[in-house]
Amino acid sequence: MRREALDAALEELRSLFPGKSKSWLRKAVLRLGDVKEGRDGSYQVEGKRELGDWKPVYLVWYSEEDGRWHCSCYFSHFGFARQRDVCTHVAAVMLYRRYKKALEKAERRRVYVAEGEVECRERLEANGELYVKPAAEKIDLTFYTSPKYKILVISNTRRIMVKCNGFEILEIEGEEVPLATAKFLVERWHGR
Image (cartoon, rainbow, N blue to C red; front, side, top):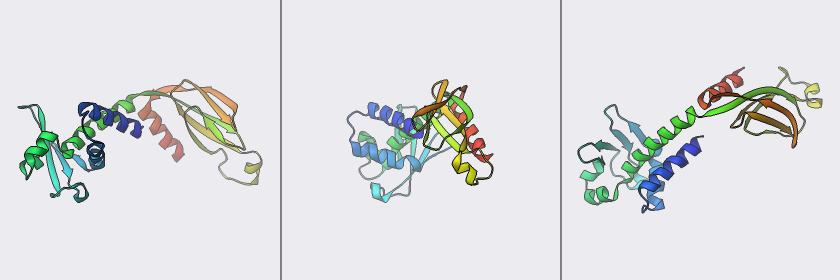
């Protein structure tokens, strides 16, 4: 989910700046974890020497007056060129905002969740994210002769199929929930 959100955010940034180099986009991605949101709508981007920064922190903000993003690096040496070319501090903030929005949208997406119990000695798979744990509280030698598992599946389709070594062993109908709820259920399920 996070990878899909990042890909969507990156594609949107790429479409806004079609002429930008792969290096510029890569630097924006590398800075993504260094963006901190301020209370006043501004952002702080931690400086990185390996990316050519000379200051520990850069301030980025949006100006309603001119409808553009600005960075404190624009007021330093070569600031005019950085502003004209849009620095990677601003690119990181723009990517951060799009990534956050894509994550929120993904969390609201509806999926199907189903639980069940299966017996399988081979490899288990399903048409969705499959979570597996032994059905027995205590594992002993009988488990290995006839292994039973509790499963939880998150799928994009209502009809959920579980296979053992390529053969369908269970078909169940999933319950529709928001993705955020499904992720919560997985955490709770693992905690049981």
